[in-house]
Structures are given as structure tokens and as C-alpha cells.
Length: 154
Image (cartoon, rainbow, N blue to C red; front, top):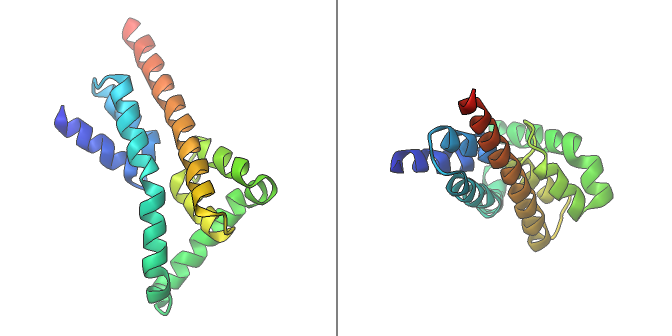
């Protein structure tokens, strides 16, 4: 059980799955849906402060390195293309909805990059990203729980 909770946390904080992978993993491994929701959400909300710290700390130091610069430019263009219109037009609410949509390429990591690119105040960005993660996690927990419940009734 503890191993499953640790994997849930790690999946939820990783950029490859976020809570969209962590919560279903936990529920499908017989963790109570509320516990899975809490662990996945907390881990995914932690992305913003950790990732923003990484951007602040290493952004200027690694900028002279070619591979780092190429990666940053690629991710920045991607975030601007995916989230740009909504975040520029709607600001806080656009960022929240962008993070909330449970699709690949959206989420806390891209939301953090978008908040950094569009210079959204950190407190407002953190609240928007946290609300988006909360709603997205609720969708994932409810959908996985109900889907698993329906599957076991067959």
C-alpha cells in the first residue's frame, strides 16, 4: 500500500503524467479514491513552486548552453501556442481553465511556463494553477472511480 502511495505521488509530480496518471494508478491499485485524490492533488500543486524555483535559479545560469537554450525556446513556443490566446485574453481564468483541461500538453508544468512567459503575478498564477489542478484531479478521481466501479459490476 505504501509503495502504491509513493508511486502515486511520484507519478503526480512528474511532467509525464501529473495527477492525470497518478490518481487513476492509485484507484486502480485499490487505494481509496479520496486518498488518491488528496495525494495526487498535493503532489501536482507542488509543481508550481518547485518548477518556478528551478526556472528562477537555473534559467540565467544555463542560458549560455546551446541545448538548454533550445529546450527552453521549444517549451516556450509550445506553451505560447497552446495557452497563449486564452491566457492573454482571460488572464487568471484562462490559465486556470488551461491547467484544468485533462489533455496531454496542458497541466501544471505548461501552466507554470505560460505564467512565466506572460508575466502573471506569482500569487495569482499559483492560485489559478492550484484551482485548475484541483478541478482536473476531481474529474480524474471521479471518472476513474466510476469507471472502475462500473467495470467491476460487469
